[in-house]
View 1 (cartoon, rainbow, N blue to C red):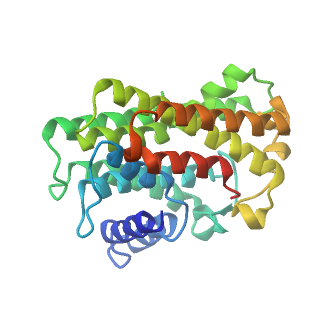
View 2: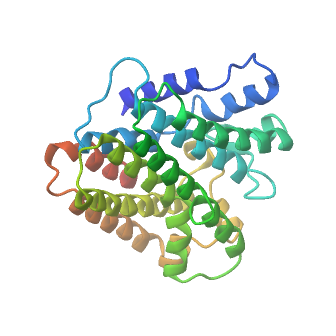
Length: 294
């Protein structure tokens, strides 16, 4: 994990606009939003899925997997910047430091998100990234779908509409499969497809794996929000309850939510059967997502 996290951080440092390049304030805020924080779960999944497809990790230089990982991380960071805005979840803390709209201002935060979204797609079509035209088109299509109204943005819309309402479990699952799960599934799909070494049946099993861990990630997030502190989480703890947001904890109860996360981990591992050692890192990441404490 540390090796991939280090690679991703170095690649992002290189690919983001220079902090001294005009417009300076915007570029500084973009780097503030992306660098030096987060678990880099999506990049980890890209590389692990590529390994499941038989692709090794290139040790030097910018590889196509690095570019995919950074594109996904830009989309993820943009979503966090926008989610924290007063018109959305209104949170002043992210990754243990002031949210972008607090450290800079709301208008800059809005432009940071817009710019990071654009940069993500720029990275996918950059000439430095050696992707076949058909693969490049598939990567753009997967990422655009995951980020749009039927994916992450749509899930956020459902989330905003659901405040103060009682959702059924299927309704809650739809929200999180879109909001959190779509980008996690895209990470696995992009890494697996770019590896070029998997059958359609294997790709389908990896997508089922990704769906399970994407949902488990959110279930654990809900548990951590209920049990964790602001200091350990790096963001405001207990905010879901304060804002009367529907969560797995308030629908299922804390104990059942933990059991559900464990069931999803089991199902994720079941979908990796047959891949052997190639999927070892994917299995470890499923374990990490369910057992994490922050």
